[in-house]
Image 1 (cartoon, one colour):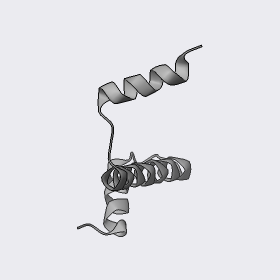
Image 2 (image 1 turned 45 degrees about the vertical axis):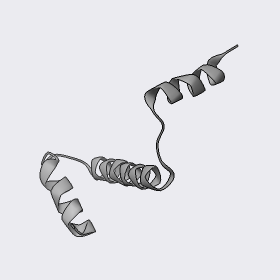
Image 3 (image 1 turned 30 degrees about the horizontal axis):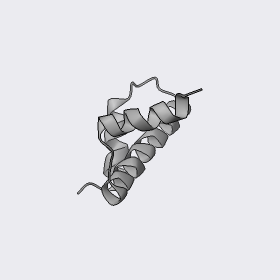
Image 4 (image 1 turned 90 degrees about the vertical axis):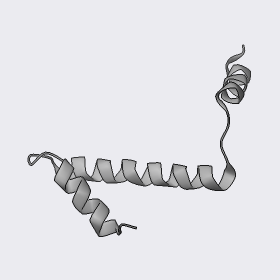
Length: 62
């Protein structure tokens, strides 16, 4: 299992040399959101595509 420092190093290695601090912050933000989403899906489960479509229909009916 990688540490946070390892993940940040990998991120920095993959960003261009001319990236800004804002670029780094944005990518860290996105990584955090993805990780939290994965954790939530593992904890609470997920929906099948057809279930999402049915829910979406309810929200968009006028």
